[in-house]
Image (cartoon, rainbow, N blue to C red; front, side, top):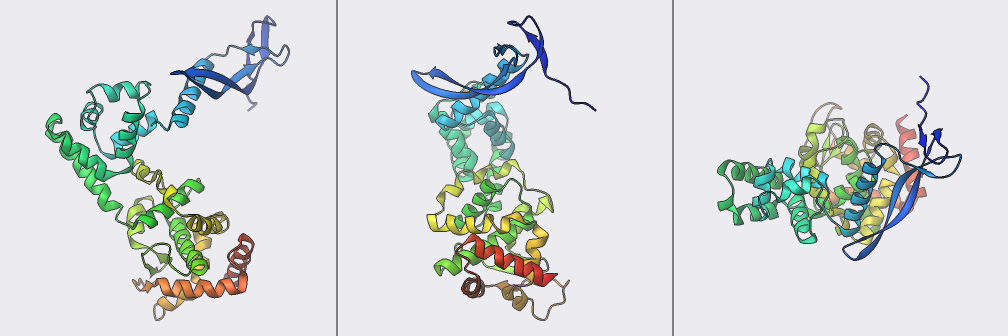
Length: 336
């Protein structure tokens, strides 16, 4: 089927012409402060004048709104909708739980821009179940029993769900930030490789958890429980809004190790990464005595991972992406 041409009436040319969509920077003053926004415009290729295309004004409003919120660090409508979903709470009870007026959240969902103070409260509630529980208790008398208990149970469930160390959480958040699609299998292997590379380069683990020698390679059980519902699909759930901002807690050294892994191992799917771990001594030694398909909960200790990757570093130089790529190629070649 032929692609539909972009045609509309050009006031200047006085005829229908095929227009071109372009980006244009505009300056707007909001609350006595100047901002620059990139918006979409439709241009007539014959006369060069801008054309009024149906729906374009609404799109420009959305573009300005999104960029303004980003510039000021304000929550978006999508953020507020996530807040309602993860805590299973409606607009009015959410507003009361946060200490706002009853219709405040409804106004924000309709497009009204929140103040920085109110935005910070919503963002904190979005990223911290403990903070949300605190607000719910502070405003307990304003909220109906049903809404209160549903939200409290959701917050408690989130706290239990995210029962991993802070740095494990930070590493996972960084992976999500850097990669567009991550499956549970891929995530398990990437955090294992990050542990190995960081341990080899800096002589200590990046997070405290030990992983287990499961059939499909190294697995961190708490992380598995966290994402098990996604099976082999990319991870996407409003509950994981709690990861937002966590990546910024990593040190420069931790980011360096994570980037080395993400920029190399991160180009492979979960199955290929699984094959690499099956060729590595820590998993093989921990699986000693087990048939390929027999479950095992034997630990791959942090010491065994560090020692193995220190040896890999001596051979390949895993302080560089080039060295890691050579290692990956050799491990995949050995599998074949």
